[in-house]
Structure formats: C-alpha cells, structure tokens
Amino acid sequence: MSVELKPNCNQALELGKYACEFMRSAAPSESVQERTKLFHTDSVLCGISAVALCANAPVVLREEALEYPNAHGVPFFGSTVKVAPEKAIVANSSAVREWDSNGTNFGFRKELGFIAGEFGHNDFYPVAIAAAQMKGLDGAAALRGMMLSDEIRGRLAEVFSLKTYKIDHVVHGAIASAATWGAMMGATPEQIESAIGMVVAHYIPWRAIRAGKQLSDSKGASAAISTEVAVLSMMRSMRGFIGPKDIFRNPESMFRQFEKTSGDSPFPLVLSTTGDDFAVMGMHFKLGLYEHQSAGALQGMIDLMRKHPEILENPGLIKGIKIVAYEPAFGIIGDPAKRDPKTRQSADHSMVYIVGTLLRKAVEKAAEMKTGKIADGNDAMWKTLFLAPYDYDPAAIVNKTTRAFMEKMTFEHGGAEYDRNYPDGIPTSVVITTTDGRTLDSGFVMYPSGHARNASANLKDILANKFERLGALAMDDPKPLVAKLNAIEKLDAKQLAEVYDFRIVSRGKFE
Image 1 (cartoon, rainbow, N blue to C red):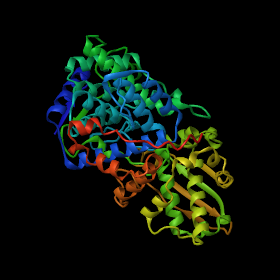
Image 2 (cartoon, rainbow, N blue to C red):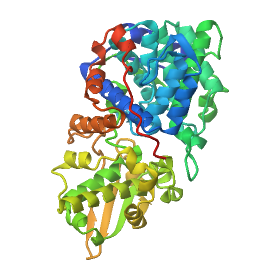
Image 3 (cartoon, one colour):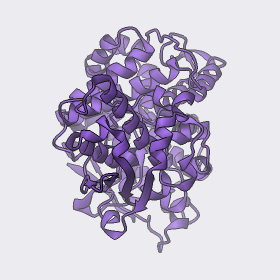
Image 4 (spheres, helix red, strand yellow):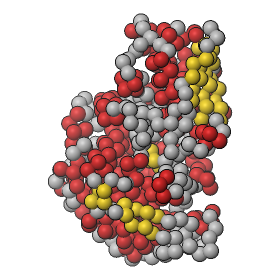
C-alpha cells in the first residue's frame, strides 16, 4: 500500500502525518527490512574505519561533540560518553560519509514516471538510532525509523532534481531527518511541518561544496551538517518555535523558485506503507571505495580483465583505455580538473584515478601470482580488487603505475544513448586498444555488481568481504559487531542503547 501526497495539498503537513503513522503501523516486507539492515551495517563499517584512520572531519566533529556533554544525550561511535544528540548525529553521519563508500540512490521509479534522478546516500541512520536511544526504544523501532528516513528521501529524489539547480542532494535527507526525528520523538504532524519549513527556508546548501580541483571536508560532511540542523529545527519546533508552513507550496521557497507552478507544489509524492515497494529496494551498494558514477567503468574493466587476462600478465600491451559514460558522470568525475588529484576527496571523484587504481592493483596481483587469472569469477574479482582507504592515501595518489595508466585514459560522453539509460542504470563502456592492434570492448554495462537491478553478483558475499576489510581497520575482530548490526531488530532497548559501545583501534592518520 502507498500514500499519495498530491501537489495541491499541504505536503509538509501530510509528510508529518505520514511519518507519525509510519512509526505506529507501517509494515515493510522482510526483504525491505533485510536490505535496510545491510545498508545500516555498511554505513557503520564505513564510519568506524574512517574514525580508525583519523579522517579529519569525523575527528573534528567528534572532538566538538565532547564539548557538549549531556547526561540525557547519546554516545557516538566507539564511545560511552553521552553528548547532545545532534552532536553525536553530526559526528556519526560525517564518519559514515567520509569514505564515500556507503549506499546510493538514483531517484528512479519508471512505473510512475518519477525519474528526476537525484543522488542520495544512506548517511542518515544515526538520526533513527539516536532518537530510539533518547526515547528508550528497541532495535525494531530504530530499524523502522531508518526505513522511514530512506523512504522519504528516496521518494523526494524521484520527483525533484536538486543537482539540476546546483543545490546539494543532502536537502532531501535533511527533510527526511526532520520528519524521522520528530515522529520518533513524539512530535505532532504540525510540529514536523514547522521543522521541515525551517530546513527548507533556512538551510539550503549549494553544490559549491563539491566543485573545484581539490575537494574539502565540506564534501564528505555535507549530509552530516544538514542533518544536524534538521534535528535542531525539529527540537526547536517541539519547544514551540513556529517555522514557515506549507513550504512545498510556498511561492518563495526553493522548490517553487526553480520550478514555477500556478500555486501547487512542483511534484506529487507517493510513499509506501506496506509490502516490498519501498525506495530502499532501488538503492545501490558500493563494493569498495569509489564514487558511484564509476561503478559501470569498474565493472567494464573487471569484465575485460576476466576475458583478456593477458593484459594483466603483460600490461605493456595496453596502448589506450577509453571510457564512455553518461551525464552526469562525464561532468562530475570526468571533469578534466580531476585528472590530477592531490587529495583523497578529489581522487575518489576522479574516474581516471579510480579505474587506474583498480587496474594497478590487478597488475600487481598478477605479478604476485605469476598468472593473469587472478581470481575465479566476477564476485571473486570484486573481492580481490577491493578498493580500500589505503588506495587513496598520499603514496597511492602519486603511484607511478597508476599515473601511467591514467595517462593512457580518455573519457568520452556517450551522448543520447547513454543519457537516456540513466538513472535506470549506470550506462558505461570501456574499450582497451592494444599495441598489437586489437580492440577489446567491454560492451554496454548497465547494471554493475552492487546495483539494485544487478541479478548476477552474489551481493551478500561481496559485502561480507567489504565489512570484514573495513571492520579490520577499526577493530581486531569485527564479526560480533557485524552480526549484531545485521540483527538489530532483535535488540532490546538496553542493548540498543549500547549498540555503539565498542572500542575503535586507532591506526593513525594517513593523510
């Protein structure tokens, strides 16, 4: 079942009603719950590994949180110290997003014609965890809150493209965070409407945080900062502060400024309440550290390496590598400014660096094994060539072999054929020309491993490798934590309160 919020209604208020009712009675299917748990586990392992390697933004925000002790608050990852909940949330959300390796949505719902194609990531789960801890709720309630957050931001991404207007995609997550926090903390629909109004009226981030040759901490912390202000807005609303009402139909709001209407909201919203048809089912897993727009190229390269192992045995055969992709991939990670990254945040948004690093690792593995067949099958290749944080450290960024491969790469826009297949898939092809006159073509890649519509890869098996590899950076044995997170709905209130009570082993800063 679903609820439709028509453009001619007060969608902010109706979102408040939907969120409150969702927390009372929604019944997502077992598959929806399982997928949400996997995304949450993924996010935590990404986050704690970033903390273990002392990534700058999470460290700064954790230190800031400690300046706001609150006996009635919640802890952040790897701590028992209770701090103001919005500070724990901003620290945890920042850590989750730091590697740019957790889940991604593409804003695509073809059956209803909702194909705005806005990005988004599973960065917002700390809101549901913190709210459940504040209210003394159990793991099942926390999971329900996570599903609510994903549903709201995922459905907004289908109907309004923020990136088209150079607005950062985290706005949808901020709106979802305000609604989720409010519904879990006992706010009224009117209070949720007020908080959403504040978020949209006061806190709209531009994509300037993602532009430029070398990216900053702002890129990774954007979701966290927007989530912090969303929760603060909800807190203020619950104290009696009144924000702008009916914000989606407000003629001066961001939405109607960019998409003119005669008085309605620019879009309908269709939100699920029961069954399988939830936004999270269309979200994409990353199988390592890479910008999601590069997944098709990575799959194409893996396919070519499996079919032509001789290029790994003798990399001198590679004369040129052409990657063909769609917009916005071509404009974002194919930007000529990204051909010479000098920071991790820029390297993980550089198509040529990401693909060059994967190829470099494959060649090194082939030399070690003295054979071009370095793994048996697609899944084993993804696990063997897992792109890890250390593949973006200062030494890796200037690696001569990687740089040599990067020099051989060209990146082209595929035109209409590629563009019309996004955001349904990640349309990409990779063509290698060889010194002996051959052309090795990956063919048209649409649904790479990790994509929601990929039906060939063993997703859980590849993700287990990712969890183990990232978890091992943060603790000696991550398996008990992974098992607990994968069964979060079974935790009682006391166990959920202590879910992040584990020791993170510092591995030292690598940048």
